[in-house]
Length: 399
Image 1 (cartoon, rainbow, N blue to C red):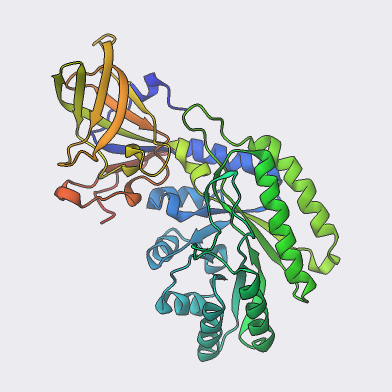
Image 2: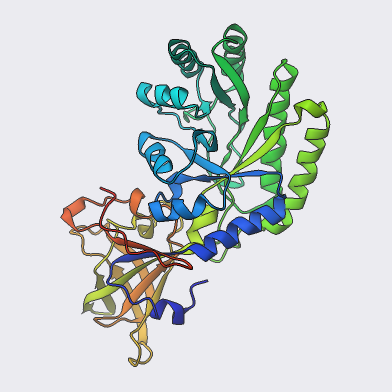
């Protein structure tokens, strides 16, 4: 995806994020071929909300998963109609819920109280709000790197809350239209067996709602497909898809023809992580005993994930300018320009020199918007999307 010679050809001022639109489309196509054209695919905007990238997504995915006012605005600007959005997240404000009801964006509700609020907004606006019940997995799923269930998590309705939510639905047919259910176990799952276990539980939870007398037109089975990190393999989506389709087909076949649900996948990191690279330049070098240190013009304020404090970090790759030859033997510690030892971005084989470049690959997801951009007043990074029609570098926005 990003061979060294291609990285060396990226002639942009640093620090800069560069994204490959062709790789995004390839990932989307891989998922669609594996799971079939019947499944709907949502892109989770939180992974990377770059406007140019959302423009690409508008042509290849069925909709967006949004979780804030800002993400709703970004979706509007990218031309996504309200029925192509799904609003989720545990911290929806009153203004955000009212906006969703007013505009017709389906809402994944996380608590009975939130469902009651949605019903109130719908009655006040003279509308019926579309909702999905976000159902919490019964137990954390160990196959997922980050798990979205457990007694201290705010995500989704547990068994007792689900009963309460169903009672609210029965009492509010004038205000609430139950579209379906939404189950999200976590992120970074690389195990086919582990993800199939999640799918089986998601459908079991959905079946419990269906047995309670509610038709389900949509079942969002989440995502959490893991990308490769630190010698591990990415989730084999091509092998997973056919197994998942057989399970989904069996579930759909149990419903009456008029009540067959559509299934939804919700993916973020898997679609964009490998499409992105964060490119930096060595400003200074210094040696202390056996330790060689390079200070980069970019750092944790742009790519906090490179510190390793958010899990496996984007791997660094040395990119020497043409004609400078190979690096001297040794090892170089990578430091950003911030006045804190937390700005340590790992180490790299070879002794870097001033003017060398370091590229952090797999930087397409959870980069700039998950980082302390305003710390020390450094400028925001440039961002560019390479595509058939290369997009101009975006200004230092995202404040």
